[in-house]
Image (tube, rainbow, N blue to C red; front, top):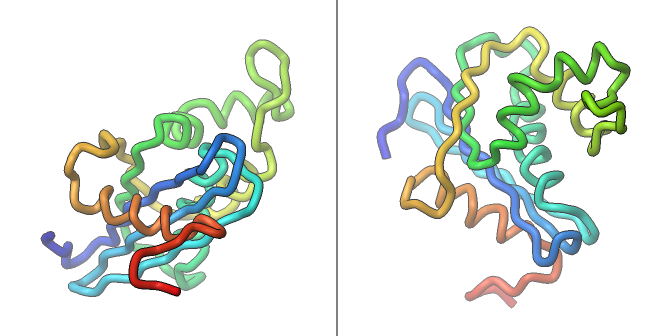
Length: 155
């Protein structure tokens, strides 16, 4: 996989064993020839929450003064469309959808909104489980984060 020289590339993914159920999130970060892997999970969650948490955790891991360009790849249209299209209307309507129902996962949307402030992020969608190396690695990390999941080669 080629490493970008001057921009940060992040691949994120979420996974859930049951929905809701135990879930994991994973992020692969590539910058200037270096890689960083992040993952974690929760006992009782949803796939959408894990997709969001992957992006949040990756962006929160950056140094506070990081101002470079970020390309963030996700296989979640919920995450991509939520942060690039829907969030503006939700905020105007007091975190309500167009049908006046409350936005789901408001806690994470607010957290994501805060962490993307003052960052230049190019949000991109990639088809999941279609052979994209970065997405496949993020998916493996998300699986590793699921609480209680047995990982081959680990106790």
